[in-house]
Amino acid sequence: MFEAALYDLDGLLVDSEPIHGRASEKALGVYGRKLSDIPENIRKSFYGKRVIDVAAGVVKSLGLSISPQRWASERLAFFMQLIEEGIGLMPGVERSLDLFDRLSVRTGLVSSGDRDYVLRVLELTGVRSRFAAVVTGDDVTVGKPDPQCYLLGAKKLGADPARCLVLEDAHPGVLAGKAAGMKVIGVENLFNETFDGADLVLPSLAVLGEKTLAALER
Image 1: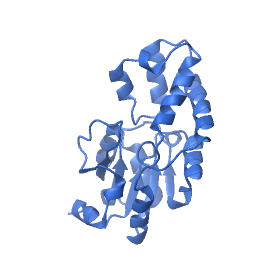
Image 2 (image 1 turned 120 degrees about the vertical axis):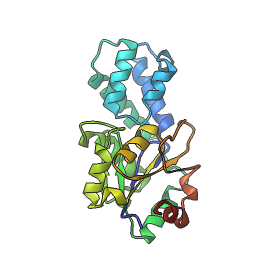
Image 3 (image 1 turned 90 degrees about the vertical axis):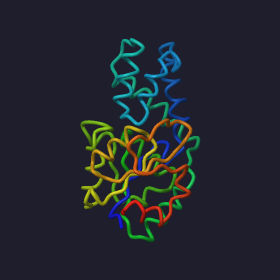
Image 4 (image 1 turned 60 degrees about the vertical axis):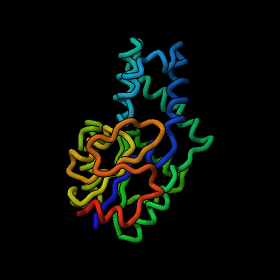
């Protein structure tokens, strides 16, 4: 059996992508711009990346006369306000966590988000205690698809990367998990388009079961 399961956050654990979109629109509105001003192919490349990397892409694409750090900070402020209005778990999350508990598989959270945001989201959704380790974008020097974040997650859990399972909804995260030498399950949502490289693709965490896990380990 796997030693550890490492969850992504946005779009996999929590239904946060619409909120991210609203926060970005508000932060761009300050400068008289909007998300649709950014070419679609560039917007899609942001999915699953660290906040600072996304901010750098936004500032460069729109030619904003501010630093990526400033825009990221302004956007984060809007996001933190919006999540207080409510943020929920994705379907099947608690069921999957219960499954790993029964199987004595340690669970960790590996996100590209800022630490303050990640911890607040876990608190608001009531699942902070379900994770023995948390890795955020503030803990690494290079974001997904680099494997640094998932390798750090395995290290914090005291697990062999080869015996870790990654649960992801974004292609950069899939690539990061595979580069770390881990098994990867891609979980579909309304925002992702490809799971190239994933060992398995599921429509939802709600269908994840013990037989699926056993098959992945063969």
